[in-house]
Length: 197
Image 1 (cartoon, rainbow, N blue to C red):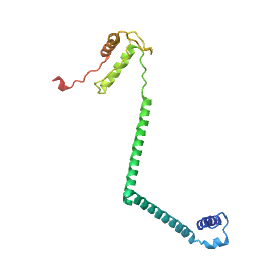
Image 2 (cartoon, helix red, strand yellow):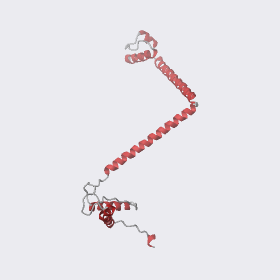
Image 3 (tube, rainbow, N blue to C red):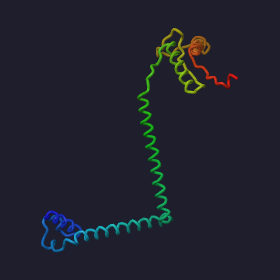
Image 4 (cartoon, one colour):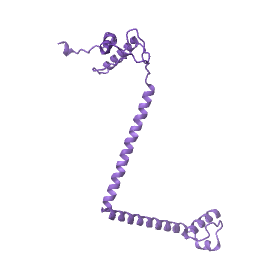
């Protein structure tokens, strides 16, 4: 009980501005000032007064800012509210984008890694399976790009010089790769009952 009294005495003394703030024991004078019923009401009264003073200062500052900007206080409050709403919307959009990025990273981690083909037959096999999967997913217009390799040539990382130009590229690499791909792809159009009639 003595500890509770001394804590309230210290709080009261701090609020009243007396020099007994660091005293751990209440003096006779401070005991007389504080009675059991008036302890909380004195603290509540001073706290309420402080709150009212701060609210009055805030109101005066808002009115001064409104006068300086040529707006009413209500217009300024509406503008602040709109800015808060926009900030919340931006935050929601950023959070949604972050969640989508995280979800995309998870799915990317689960993807199968395909090796880069190093010769013409493996390049044709991989391209044919990609074309078939895309066609099954409903993609009917596709572009396939090949590394222009001769039939028996392996990918070496060194750029292949074609002294015969475009004609030699087409004759020795482009046409054989394209024909092999088209003969390898097994994508059939779905025929409906209406088409057969």
